[in-house]
Image 1: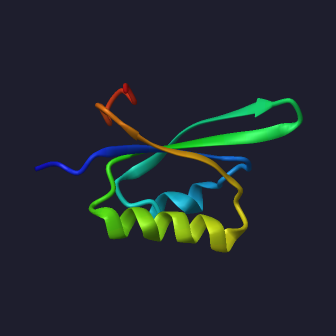
Image 2: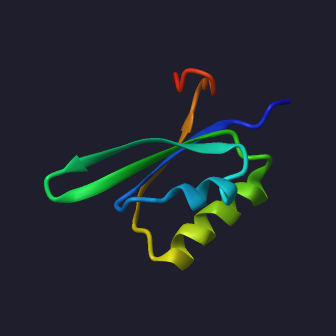
Length: 81
């Protein structure tokens, strides 16, 4: 069975160095909302412990996590959900 896909939105920009920390997940988009930057991370973590590791890394970095949601479907090639 394939692990579910997740979307994590944080209230800060994440640099390219984060890609190595995200495993099979990727920084999909970054946008400005008012005066704050939002970053969307999407993908399928290897397992639940990998997801928790990503969340812990964000917390350790001081990145405010705005939302975490499980996606019903996810196409890594197109970022479709």
